[in-house]
Length: 318
Figure 1 (cartoon, rainbow, N blue to C red):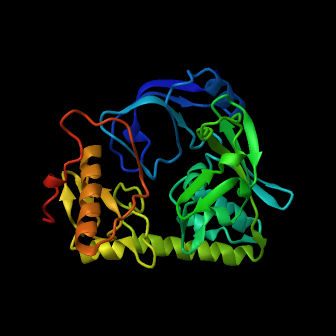
Figure 2: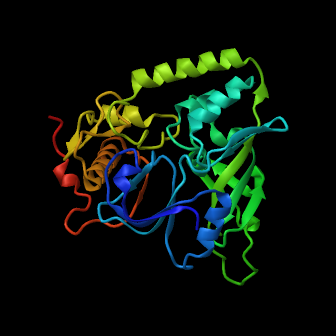
């Protein structure tokens, strides 16, 4: 292997909440062939987690008993390819937005508001300002547990709001009388199509969107972006604020007073604090407004004994 293998890697260094436990091992691949070789050498039952900027991820305090693949700034190529833009999974979404504008494309500006990598944006169909990632995808490249690469078109996937799933018929599992599990594979790159346009105007739009983001979001404190999906015809932030939850704390975690759909780490939050606050917000909105908010963030790993989510502790806004 040409990459770097780390044992007991603190995941607080790799998630934007700056909280959580350790991964049993983490691998930083040197390049795509190195990643393929590494995956080929893993046991078939080894849990694998791909992490970009960790902006929609919480690793519980007991850690992740498997292998984490750290992608940010590793698979980091972005280039023009025959009127399309090719971007690898480790490219930060804002970098793709700026690259598109520099080359006189329009329609990528919203990506500047997504605090993650292209791999993460593809995996959850990330979006903001009225646009979503898969609206611009022409083709993707994936890698599976055997290190095999595959290119797929969008019609191979079920695509929805903050949701993406490979259609069963697109998998390679043999025919069986029983339903076959979905093949385990991860995005390593994508080709995007944006319409030609005024690059200078696109750059100005990016500046405007970033200004809006700075004004509306608590970017000075560790956070994971929007915690909950917006329910149909409504906004999660509006519901949370209507329940009087702005400022609600649990340990070192707090519902942001700037934007109610953000939970911030005030400096010493544990993953259990954050998870407890997520549960408290979810239960309060369900009880008072009859709406079950669905988390956008992914929560993985094991709780430390006696330190699991405890919404009873999240009782004060003071």
